[in-house]
Length: 258
Ligand code: NAI
Image (cartoon, rainbow, N blue to C red; front, side):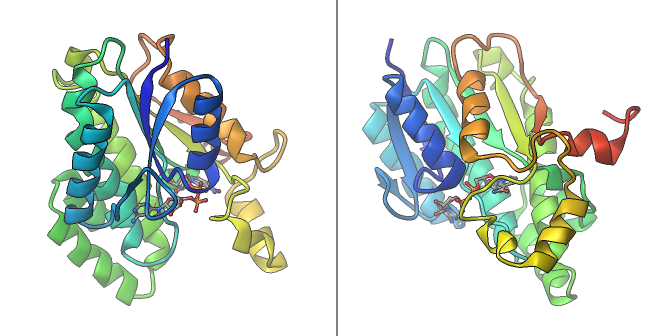
């Protein structure tokens, strides 16, 4: 039976691949993005999230079978904290009641292998406290100190921790909603394209994210797994960060740490 599925970041990369696959299998997709989407909204700010939630609920008629949060940014500014953490959490919390009204509701987010890299503890703590002004203040300090490279990992680590905390609560597990994350290594999308254009960056990336199994992935690889996570077949998996990374996480953390 056709399901109605909201996908953020549907205009590009992983979100676009997923939206295409879902439409191909007969589902109805409500795409949410800054541009080229059914719902155009800026998920970096509270007003944008509120308008995205309202417009998605209206499009869906108050009932959603699944939500997949793919939208993200990966620069060295405070933006990853605003989009990758608060943008995802705000949207999922806003749409959760519409999920709870569905027969087989599912939710998934896109994390990253970067969530295992060094983070800024103050930023992560403020994210987990749900305190966006404090998180932005902490992240601004990090950005200004020249350590902005920690903010993307911080946003993805906080997202994974938030997910593991809420997935077993009455609001999620109790309402029958599995909530999981796919954490990719390096995926060939417009986000990673600049890295491939610079031989020096490519070498740094190969060392930071070693992928002995089949190398860099295409976006359809990540979309395939997200599609299963939000399918009715996933009745019992929740709170999992699934590293879909060509072996990067196993290489970096080793056999004992998982
Ligand atoms: P992409 O850049 O191709 O697509 C991201 C989409 O998010 C774009 O359509 C963009 O417009 C949208 N977006 C960005 N900021 C937004 C905002 N404020 N409001 C609404 N929409 C916004 O990137 P890609 O590679 O498809 O990334 C998807 C997810 O995968 C992201 O969460 C990213 O962090 C994650 N990821 C990507 C990896 C890669 O190597 N490409 C590796 C690991 C994780």
